[in-house]
Amino acid sequence: MAGKQAKLLSRGQLLAMLRHVKHNRYAARNTVIILLSAKAGLRAGEIANLTWPMVLDSRGHISTVIELRDCAAKKGSGRSIPMHSSLRKALSGLKAVTDDLTGTVVRSERGGQMRPRSVVNWFSALFTELRFEGCSSHSGRRSFITAAARLVHKSGGSLRDVQQLAGHRSIDMTQRYIEGDTTAKRRLVNLL
Image 1 (cartoon, rainbow, N blue to C red):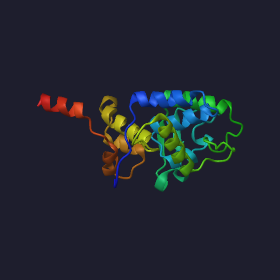
Image 2 (cartoon, rainbow, N blue to C red; image 1 turned 90 degrees about the vertical axis):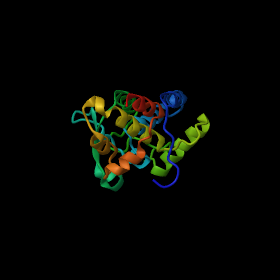
Image 3 (tube, rainbow, N blue to C red; image 1 turned 135 degrees about the horizontal axis):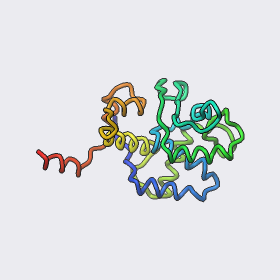
Image 4 (cartoon, rainbow, N blue to C red; image 1 turned 90 degrees about the horizontal axis):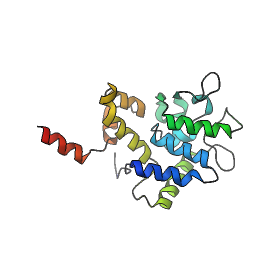
């Protein structure tokens, strides 16, 4: 990737973000935006284009899987993403205060679809308020991909699974997202 990559979010930073929006006028929506990025690895455009049918099961309940359709994903890279329990809970809360369960999940303050640029700007404003330097709308996604890559061996999976979750066409692109861990490298060398 050309240029500077977005910084990863620590667990503490993610919790601070969630606490910050908790008492906000649009707390349910804002919590979902954060978790779609950090717990599902969605891009700003995918967050903006995600519709309720992609997160609801056939009975109208929050599904256990996000079925991100090609029309909502970058370069038609639709995919199925298992739903994290905290995201499921947040979507249930948002669903309870939503009238239209056919349109987009994330709505603007005026009630229309939130644009991808608006999602980027929303994250930028949040990071400015929290004084998180170097973070962007891609920080949650990068954190998700890095964490998945570090933990994939515990699930019996491979980097190919992380690639598919990220919606990347090449494993090289996935590898560019993964941040190295200095402590892990030190432990690895000591094991040699």
